[in-house]
Amino acid sequence: MLAPAPRPPGSLALRCSRVLLSPRARLSLLALLLLSAGSLVLLYEPQRLLSSGWRSGADGTGAVLLFALAYGACTAAFVPRPVLSLAAGALFGSAFGLTAAVAGTVLGAGISFTLGRVLGQDALRPLLRGRWLAAADGQLSRHGFRSMLAIRLFPGVPFAAANYCAAISRMGYLPFLLATALGTVPNTAAYVVAGAQADSPGSPAFLFSAGFIVVSGLAAAVVAWRKRHRLRGTAPVPAPVPGVAPEPVGGAAR
Image (cartoon, rainbow, N blue to C red; front, side, top):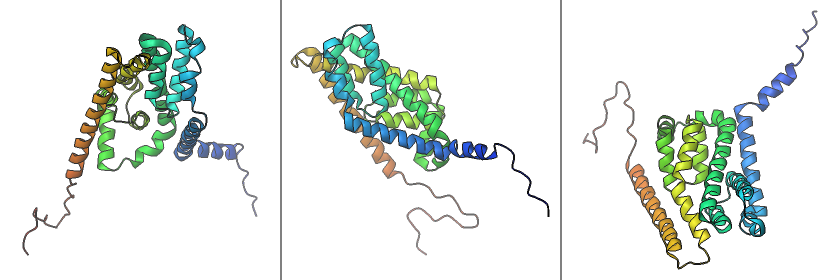
């Protein structure tokens, strides 16, 4: 009887690496990272540190840069952006606060986009079989910049959800980051100015920024409601079956 052929060296390590780098394993790692980040935010509430812990030394370019880095990390960890933008305005004023907030927004979006693209795209793209999911994927893939710009301009779409939806699509990095940088400026500026003028709520700047926040939120809600109504009122058309005559609309008497 012939002895079994010896296994080539490194075959076990190769199989283990294939399992660890498989789409499902990477998707599991992404889910674990997001769950851990959300848990840390709930436990330690880093937004409180950013809003009150830096008041003693919140000046200078270095502080603005450090705040932008912390803003990006917190945004990627699901800390609400309005809270961070209010803190940026309260700490640095309108001009420097807006710079830090927009830079942190782009950084956080880039982190989320990279995580979704590297760890989740291969596993989730085969699941885009529904009509609406396929339509959204096609829109983001073919018209990435203008689609993401519209999403950023309307605050009704969750920031993290837009990041990961864009990552799963075939949108490029540059259109995604550029649309994020431009589209988030109006709403972010409103929160930053509100934070900078929080000590004088009767000032025209505070009233204008608060009014812009309310109006933009209502506009986003109206648009979302109309889109939802249209989607619910549109029924899918069944594909014709060969050899079977299609049934007339409304039903015919047999």
